[in-house]
Image (cartoon, rainbow, N blue to C red):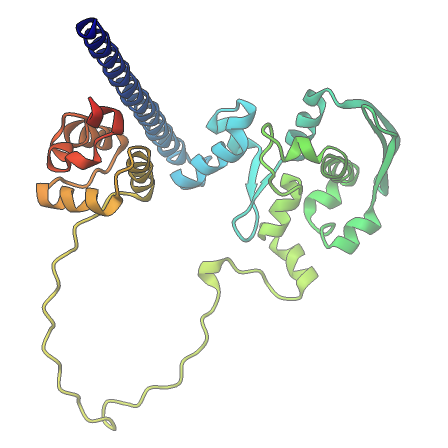
Length: 328
């Protein structure tokens, strides 16, 4: 009777150990899947950056590859636009902030299905008045006049002088998008960029410099042309005694490049999931002479090689094995 009981207990322990092993393997597989997904995202970002470099080389782009990529991530990708389409509807304001074309923001509003009614009360070179009703709310009147535009300091550009009604309508719609449909313009389908139209942003950027100078009273200079403060005159060589030249200092050897911040963060998350002290892991890697990973793919190989359940890290630190493995 006791022998049968012992055999049953042994069988139960074996089943428990097998179940714990399967659980540990499932956790490891889940981690590998996460790393694979991150690698795919990293490769996709690299391909998109290559596309941004090709577009940036065009005479139409006039933007650096990182700026093209940023504009697409902020404005184009949420709307399903490609990079070229994004640049057609984006403008950079002074200070480096993005501005969207008014038609782009209003298109988000119309696609949302929340715009129940739009009535044009007045549309003239002097004023545009719109009655806008959002689904489930009372109608709201939005108006923009040339006095409003002049008070805001945006009505002196050539675009405003030649197309006042269109500019007033664009400003009224962007204001309505901000006030009545803010969840649309700042949500997943929008970028939350400045609500000035592209034409207004061109004015703020200084492209219409004559008009801007008339407003602020000084000519607009791009950052590269801004005059630096004058320095005090230096004494002439005849009046100042020559200084002995100091011997050149030996240059320090360059420090080895560590892993990028996002790789360090992911590695710390992996160590936390496995209850491995980060200091212990780093001491082990230094002793093992492991190169710091630069990509998610390299991080995956590092984890597989050193931190698998039967890997050298756990052989050097058996007390850190997962509890179920230690019991098995």
